[in-house]
Length: 220
Ligand SMILES: [Zn+2]
Image 1: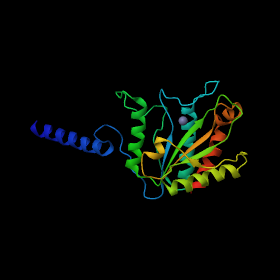
Image 2 (image 1 turned 135 degrees about the vertical axis):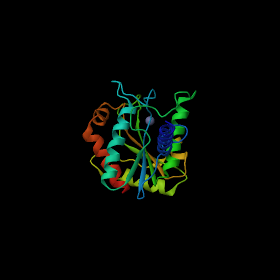
Image 3 (image 1 turned 120 degrees about the vertical axis):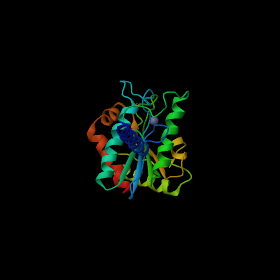
Image 4 (image 1 turned 90 degrees about the vertical axis):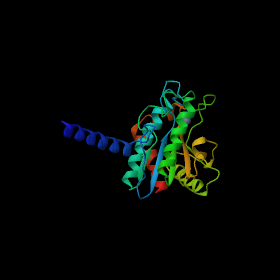
């Protein structure tokens, strides 16, 4: 009987060790990077924070995630490692946090700091309801990083060269996700939900995949 409880104790200890390898003490998953080129893809918003929305109710949160997943596939196809800050519709915020937005952004920063990526790409959508004609993609970069600027310019050039009929410049962006770590970071505003035809395109898998290809081929 004594031997049996000793075995049970050993099993319990082994389980605890394995669990502690996969999770840190706060219960959050520990993220590791691959040896080669590694990217953190950050789908903006999530949970109750839907981000921008169209008149018909399309939420930025959902399109961001769809594009992020296609982007992950594109990079992996090209041999890069990828970590998603969120892989589902939920926010990353602790349910107990008073300030849900801050907690969500904090968790994103922690993932980036853990992974130490070669590049962070944050995916967002725009909205400008007072002028529904405004459309197009624009890439932003962290003002402190030369590499961030180079990546953002390469991505924007790919958009401008494509059949999307866009002529914009990559520019400095004043966003927390760009500035919260020292790793090269860009933010792509993938289009305007306030423009009905762009909204329609953004909802299609073919267009989401095309944007992912344009971003991935610019970076790799
Ligand atoms: Zn956004």
